[in-house]
Image (cartoon, rainbow, N blue to C red):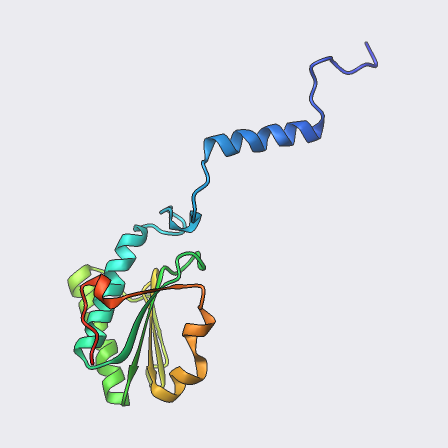
Length: 168
């Protein structure tokens, strides 16, 4: 036996660098890797989430929700792609918007809500559809929590780009 390493052997550092180079060749980097649909993160892709967000925003507008905002947060979150944020003037209106959104997404698009919070209190109702989260606020609560600033790195999607007309 020889005490000398074989001439072509790699050091552990070289082996790691070689593995990383091979991985980089195999998987090309993208501008935003969060946009790539995967089974674990985005089973239906970002376009399906965009359809859900559009339908939810449409319902909020049709029910006279104000300051309706669609926020693309796919670059900031591995779990959610879009937020729809809207303001209502009363508990009754917030309930109506939330119930109509459920109806539109379930019957119209075959999606089911995964969770709901705040329905009884009705100052902030959160509807969780997986890739879409809908936030329905009364005016004071929306101003207090200011999700638009909290998620400022998200991209505000103009309602017109979704084929929607904002309430005046």
